Length: 97
Picture 1 (tube, one colour):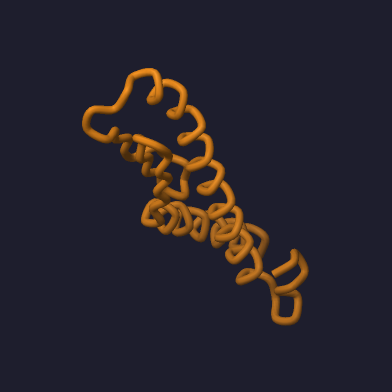
Picture 2 (tube, rainbow, N blue to C red):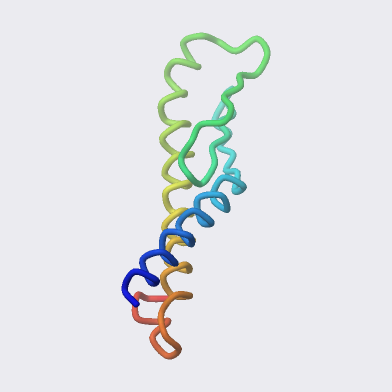
């Protein structure tokens, strides 16, 4: 029984990872646009034409951090849903869901 539950959990985690890869988060800040997925992988970084190098250097870390923070929050939200879906009926709100 416990082995079946662990196998189901692993399968659900793999499904969640695929689902998170489909969720795209875009953060635009000044001349920079950053796109990440909810697995916190950077997919794209682009700069407006004619961008000032100093502004890009100043803005890039903040834009990346904001995008990755939003991805982390989305990942946590989706993970909570997964856990609540796996709990027996009536216990779905146990973790704040």
